Amino acid sequence: MLPNFRRKLNTTQHYSGVANLLDAQALGRGDVAHAFISNAPVTMDRTVKAVKTSGNTVVVTDNSTVQVATQTLTDDHTYSINRTNMLPTDPPNGQQVEHTDGYTVTLPIGPKGSGSSYRLNDNATQQAFPLNYRAAAKVHGRNVYEYNSTGTGAVKSPSLLKTLPPALPSAIAAQLMPSLPTASQEAIKQAGPIPPAIPLSYMATTNYDLQVDKQLGAPLSVAIDRTVTAYADLGGKQIELLPVLQLNVKTTDQSVASAAKTAHKSGLMLTIMSTWLPTILTILGVFLLLWTVWRELRRRRSAPDAPVDDKQPVNSH
Image (cartoon, rainbow, N blue to C red; front, top):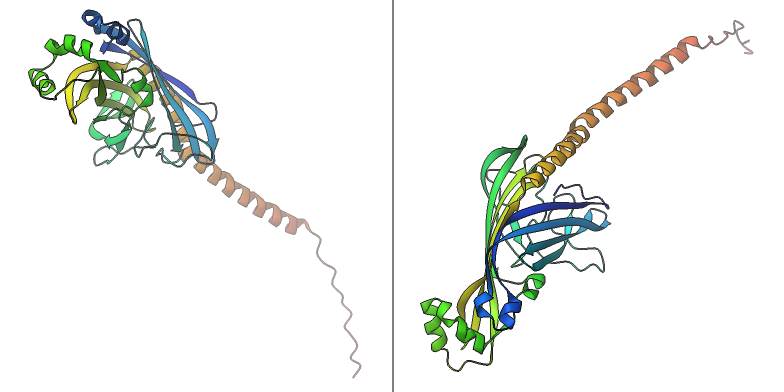
């Protein structure tokens, strides 16, 4: 995503990979044998779009659509960003956005490598985590910095929670018991009476690997490895059950090449605007000054001499 947040910004990156996930419909039917889909090919389209600008503030939507097996999963977010430093900022009046204190869709122009202290927003937990510099590299002719970040916490993304069941019928839980870790089975047995519907909560751990354009701060390549695990809320405790989503995707080679090509064009324009344009304007300014001085000197030389009065005034005294 390139940091050129104009009113018409609408950029899409494509990802591919594999996923293991819960089939909520099969689970709802009590079909435990087919409730989990394993090693399914997955594609993901992530679109960042500027929807409103006000001064140095731009409101962007960051929407992802995941296609896996017969399921379509969506993950939609809205952020308010300062166009100067790319950090979150207060939104324009009346605009609803997610709160975060980390970078969301791009790093600042000219990002730091070693010694940087950036934080990356994790949209699953809606928290920011350290973004650690790893190395310098090249991607399709562009100099990049490689970073890594890992976020862990309770799932807070409303769009992600929509795809996950809020409770598990006890009858289905009984069928799943043999598949649970031994420690979890013992914890459930000691939790006391089991309600007809067991409340569920979810924890997510996401690992991000980014290759970020050294000049622009735009991520050219992104790899995401996310695991969402279900927990049963029983007897005042959270008891780990099973992973319900394991997503491993990376930007496609074609998408990386396209992003690098766009970065080259944007980088050239940035170089012109930040380096050559000030120099050209300075030269033009000096030329204009010299031209003005030359015209003034020429005007003075071509002007006729003022007439001289030879008559002396008569002294009346």
